[in-house]
Image (tube, rainbow, N blue to C red; front, side):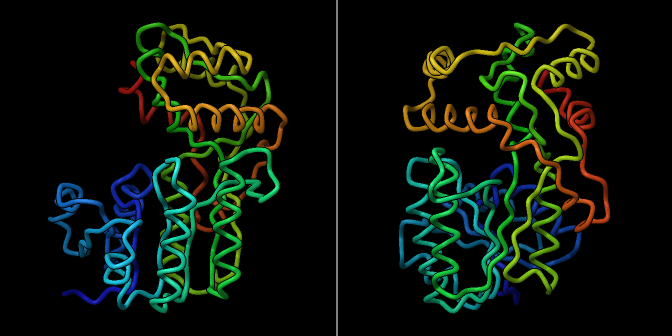
Length: 289
């Protein structure tokens, strides 16, 4: 078994996949915690990767997976039980002697927030602090790649939807989040720090539509809905109730202008400029055209 002291959760998800690529390019060994053999097989050919199969709700598989780990990257997919699963992980990591947790969080995380996702991130952050572990919280803004969920309607209807009016958001490309995470996991000096991670500009959804129209060479329109209309649209799209309510709270948070500040974290940490929305659309054209 290869010597590795870094654990990656969420390794086959959108951010995790890019983080794995970065670590492989840096030739850094890591242990990837996955839910099943099929997910593990996705990384089977990587000499840097050691695969651990288990479940965040299963204390025994966590204890085994965390053996010998010093730094862990904590990311779970969006689910109704994300807070509970992340707290399970944090408690097990503390018990196993993990020294440092790097947690993907969200800008404005706060236990008193009206937004459930911001509350849950803050609850987990606070538990890590409470246990006296070293931490780095990567508080990211709205993911540019979230727009891929509207890929079908952009392709076939020339439309995408939201309910944040003309508020601007400093949306971030997940490749930049992975770049910052890779630095934090492989370098000293990031203990007990919070990094806000945004794109290089603040942009409205109407401006996103203009950029999409120009690059895709077809008319794309942003349809701004009120909360009730958005609820209906997400219901029709098949989103579960908890996620619909959470997304509407998120949109209200963006609409209040609470996610418009631009931070230079990506450039400062990676030496590369943060990816613009324009570059994102160029790179992900096939999802929209």
